[in-house]
Image 1: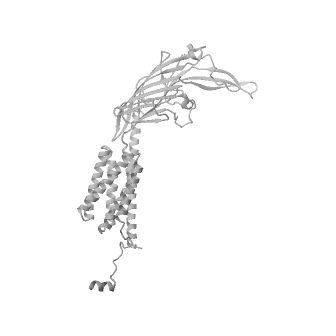
Image 2: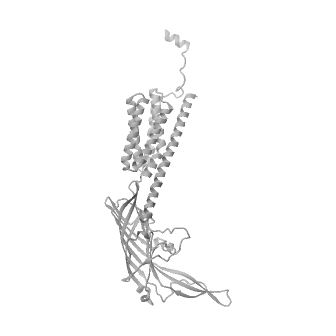
Image 3: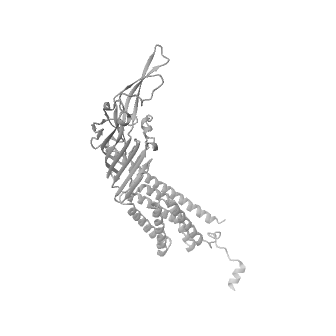
Length: 458
């Protein structure tokens, strides 16, 4: 076995290990900067308003059930406080989201102002009837309290003005708080249900209208609490992400904004059950609801992190190219020169993330790659002892950086493009080295045999 060649490969492997450690440090910096960005967003939300979830309107009927204690002698009874929730029959919401940007240092957050119009129908509870109330064992009687209507708001700091609610054509002044454990933030208002006394259900269904203007950040969700829910959202923001548990039935996304429509029935969701059953203490209520997020067109930290993950591949391909020059041109490249070339490659990723925080990602990528390619081209001109070779290697690096950018922007095709790149590079290496005698590489030159020496003399 050629020990010289083995030792050389071991030294280069050690250099690659050092560069891998450097790339991991760069990756840590990228993730740390991403955490700073997330912290800046949360800081903006604390001073503005966070993601919003709008719920309602829902009518709450508080009541007490008097239950006899079976084992008590003499006869005793106890009271249990409960609530009956009455959800709308129909609900239509039309919302206009106007986006804007708020900055904290160099970081920004997407915020919005939403003007919405709500309408629909809901059945008023009969104050004289307890038919809809579930009876316990040993039931004695019900004591029905004052019904009130509830509107849930994810972040109350986002309310721009007093919401205007009309129920059966009558204004209902809203007050702060929901009086529901499952909805920690929102509004409520007592309602008069005396006109519904003794009427059948069909006669107790009345219309409602609500005007709501609210501020929020990043995303907005609307809970489908009615039997039939129809939501329409318009916005001039051209980069929406439709999240939640329901995709819009119809949507249009252009450079001038988006429009989306949802249609959800009570059979499609468990949102009523989720609201009726308060979550455990400390747990946040997570509703099955349509949601739209105003996305950033380019997340520089996600792209930078993906780029760094290709960093080791960059180093391996570059070192393979340098070693091919060693073999084909019979050059000797010192491991320190390998290390310096690899550090220049690692520095590219640090330049990329730092520049992309101040300029568009494409501009940052072009500037960082041009700086590193120029530096490596200049340095390798002396290492490879020819400006033609240095220029050729710089051209190969330019192609490699171009392929990397294609991998970053073609998220869905990244795997196939990366696989093709590796295959092409392996094919090139195999083609170039197909006639190399690896056993003879690095071996000391053999002395001529006596017969060969006499033949040469003759």
